[in-house]
Length: 329
Image (spheres, rainbow, N blue to C red):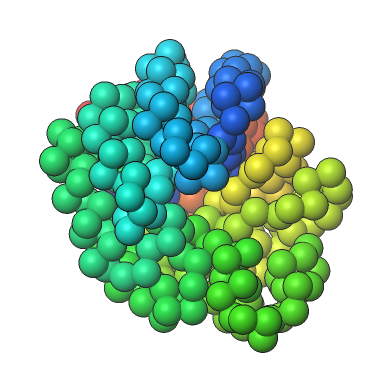
């Protein structure tokens, strides 16, 4: 029997399955702790609720790029089959880029869920990264890309359209810096990044580009990592006002606030489950539910509510759990 994802999402059935949190670490001790925390929370929630991205761009010391890449390979190779481990390599114009791909994707490609490429400026950069993966024997790996300049924002729709691209992330701090002082430092902060017109425009362009092409928009970091209340409010705004379905974490204390902000509420989950079950029983034909008409357009919405609940470790009603427990063929 066809799975609801295949029935309701069709060709987009593979684009919305990423965890809502992407956790970055680049120092060996923190990378190890991140992988351990991922394993512990996977056991707690019954699903892998955040990616761990091992960072070469900011983590590797100058001159020590090859050694850091080898360390990343060693750590990724130790991850369990349930783990979701990614790597951020250097930008495509960095001298260590090809080396990163050859070492990391070439030796640990089977253990990785994706490669993150920073400072992508154009579709040509995506093409270069894609070719490097092919040459390393890791052509199966999707690319996630980081948009960090006004020119890249201008090309976001073209970049999102590339078939290898899975997600676009917004690089807030580099984006603000790229304006030569035209955006004040407050534009990097917890409040200014949601109010300055140029930053708001960039965020909306990236989110819109992703949704236009069935890709995942990933929101930028919040540097005030000790303020969990502010962190949660930023995540709520990213999810509810700006259309983002994923967000970066740079400190373990940010992971749970992101999960909570991106998770649907208990009442929404229950309603979504009831409508999905009724729709399935009707063969996905239109139904009347609580006095309102529902068809495949609303079924799609409520199914995505259930998927988001699953990806954030929320408890699912018993009647829909088999859809998330049974492997699809």
